[in-house]
Length: 418
Image (tube, rainbow, N blue to C red; front, side):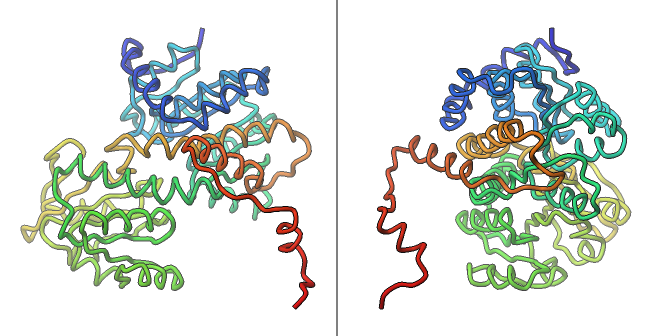
């Protein structure tokens, strides 16, 4: 019997319907699942998964289990776990430690339960599990063969560990694979953030001024979708090159204090802290809406906003109103957590199909190369990236050209005849 800590196991049938639905729209992962069933690459190994616990993640866990793994799973954010999906996984024989709206202490306890299952492979999202393995559960870290990281935030934390010479096992930066950031970070984030905002607020986007903080791949996707919805887009950046990119893409880069005076909707996607603080709130319009698309809830400084407010109340599900002393009202979505997951269903299934295919194949790569990897952060091998891309094209019915032997020789030759 699996171990589980879920809100209500009786919710399993509803969660099963969600998992079955997304599995029909994840053809790349389905091909990998069939291969895993035949080859059983994870037989005898334990895999710990800490990713936003909704239907697509659940299907990844089931694919790993189909490959022979003993799987444990916990959510990577207190507000993104869907209780019916968690129950369905527990009912399917997977160890589950997660429920929606966990307190900070409960969230940490769930992750510690996950670690105490003694994983051989860790699949992390944001770096919280890896952080605990390097601090409070170092004895478990000694047996970990390696891990994979899903997000930009998590990769930054890993590279910091590596730079200090403190990383205890090899990690693969799945976030940095082409088939992850070009599609998941850009198209997935762009669509799911706006889906979360619109379903939460029920307000129109066309004609509004949207301020996107950060113009990495997530910011690019958010800005692109905002323009498609008819918004005027301002971008705030600290990187001069990215600011020029935003300008060339038809956005308006400017200092955040100037942008604060103009925006109707503010979306953070930087991976940093204190992107919007008291000095910004002081000049924002009455009715301004704040939300976050970064991994942690520190990009919008909520204590500053609370300190400036004469009152605060919840006005809709996932919308909190802060009444400032001068009568202005500022609205915060999803408690400043990931708006696309805390107030939505996350990225579309077809997008996560590629990201989770990378996770599954990278986890297998770690097993296949156990003992031969150093304790450092690795990029996803090109053959894995290319395989996922080719499987995706096949699922779309798309055929592309291939180099002839002569062409391949030509582009690898430096001494071309003139």
